[in-house]
Amino acid sequence: MGQSVSSTGSRAAGRGGQLRERAHSFNPARDIGPAARKGNLSAPMSRQYLDVPYRSKDAAKALGARFDGTVKRWYVEAGVDLVAFSAWLPAGTAPFGSASTGIALVDEAAAGVVAVKKGISLSRLLNGVAAAVAQAFASGVWTLVEVNEASVRNGHVYLELSERDGAGQPIARARAMIWAGTASRILPDFEKATGAVIGAGIKLLVRAKPVFKAQYGLSLEIDAIDSEYTLGDLEARKKEIRMRLQQEGVFDRNRRLPPPWDYRVVLVVAPQEAAGLGDFRKEAERLEQFGICRFIYAHSRFQGEGAAREVVAAASAALRGLGEADRPDAIVIIRGGGAVNDLAWLNDYQLARFICDQDIPVLTGIGHERDSTLPDEVAHTRFDTPSKVIGGIEQQISRRVREARAAWDAILAAGMQSARTIRLTVERSEAAVRADAREHLARAKQESTATLNMIAVGAVRRVHDASRQSLALLNEVRADAMQAVATAKQAVPVLMTSVRIDALSNIGEARSATGLALNTIVDRTAAATRVAAQALDNRLQRVAERAAGAVQQARGNAQALMREVAGQGPEKTLTRGFAIVRTEEGRPVSSSEQAQIAPTLHIQFRDGSTEVRTVPAKGRK
Image (cartoon, rainbow, N blue to C red; front, top):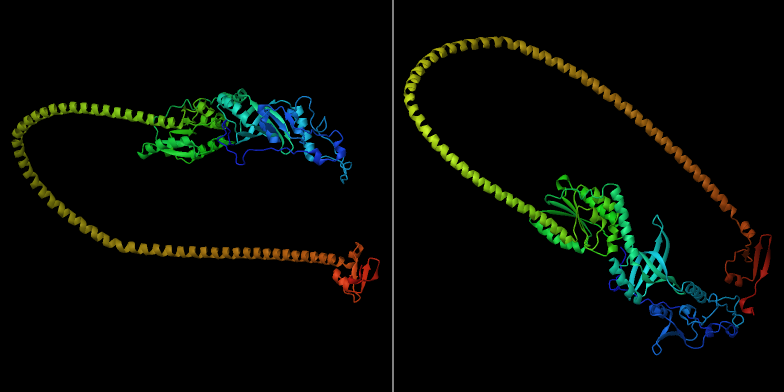
């Protein structure tokens, strides 16, 4: 975002001191001859007073005018060209120079000055242009502009203005200024009406007067700003995006989501050094310290061209970097306040559509209580400031804590009541069980004596029967075991023979398979070797062919160079108008010192040669 300008000018101090614009002074008594002074170029010979309104005093002062405190009027000294001050000359006073253009031609030859051309100085030409501009635009014109850059120096506001076409390409540019006296009068009213400050990106309807100065070129002087146009432009931009989202059926999609039941993980998108971010993090770190909630931060610009796209990119990258286990319960977008035109960068379709498409509630705390941005309108919940966002999160967490504590108290009370009821039931059941047990014990004692006697008799009888049966079974087992051992001794030799036969057969088959595999490997290796050798021969042949071609080309280039060198002999040089100078001995002469020493020189031309005798330097007159 470019620098914004407030009415006080304290937020952007100039580094070069007050900008002083000096127009080139033209003194006819000094710059033109007597003949020229006899014509229409005569300059006023006394002090010339000007009718300068208060709002234009800075411009007049920058052009070189002075203030006479005695008569309370601005004036210029005698001999100064009045073209630049034509807008403030009293009625009936003609500026210096031509009446139509403010430019007069000077005949320097008539003035006794050695010259080959007639003409005027550049400053006089440009002063004539300034007079024409001042005459064409005696008052300001209401103009639609867009601010590209703004700065303040010594109370004066300097602007870079432009106009863009439908594709966003600039089609006109201009410099403009609001003098300090005018700025202190119109900027407070504009800021109060719109809540915006003059800065990059804002569109204005201004009353501007074109001013041309010889030293600084064309610029605009602004003396009024229509605040209603700026408000209308900002609101029209929001209305267009709002209607588009409503037509697409997504305007209130995020607002219809159920609010987060609790906050465990929160994604926060904010500028790196935002003032509101510090207030937010102070409370957020307290929640993280006790393990209540975790905050993940993503940073982006919130002002300037492309800021909204960076916000979307930062939030999207942060969401992609989180796993399903770290899925945030909410996305928080905070900024920390600012002027209306600073917040206008967030009135962007892509940012608003990104918020609408989220299946996670989006909370905003952009910090602008008087007016809301489009992200505020489409977000699930809007807070005025970042501090109120973290406050709302804390309130929700506190509400869930209170609900959990109330549920725990209810569960504890119900448990204690159930425990008392169960204790009474257990006590009654225990009494009944004790009574039944005593009754059953008495009856069991009576029945157990007879049962015990019967058991003893039956046990003795069963022991005797089991002893007889165990002897018979033992004899039977011994006989079966001896028979099985004899049968096994007979079967073992036969089985060993079968095992040996099978083993020898398997070994033979394995040897045959191994031989076949070895032959296959040897054949494949030989084939691969032949292919590699053939490929190597082909590559060597191509290398030899390319080398022979390169040598042949180099030989041709060398022969061409030799022919060119051979063709650059002395004969060609002589045909181009040069000559060869030699001494009597035939040595070439390459310096004037050698030529002065030699008594005779031979000069060869294209069509012949001649002999020249030299005169010694001391004999020359």
